[in-house]
Length: 107
Image (cartoon, rainbow, N blue to C red; front, side, top):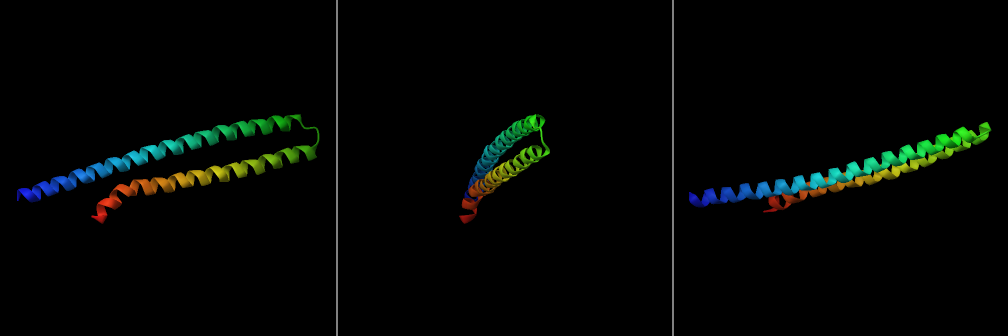
């Protein structure tokens, strides 16, 4: 009976340690995602402000369309790049969160 209780205690401690490792990975990844979103937001605001300043300085409709088209293109490319990077961070988050439990299930 004592041996079984000790085994149960060990399994409980292993699960607790796995949960702590998993939460550590969640915390680290969440911080990386927040930093990435903050950087993107800052850059998007700066790019939008720059494009607006350019639009105020144009004299012709053709030039205004050109400035707006370039802004739309660069904004789209920037969004896709950042969204891909954030998607990779989320995928890594899932892998790192699951990793401690994967080894426990293999036993």
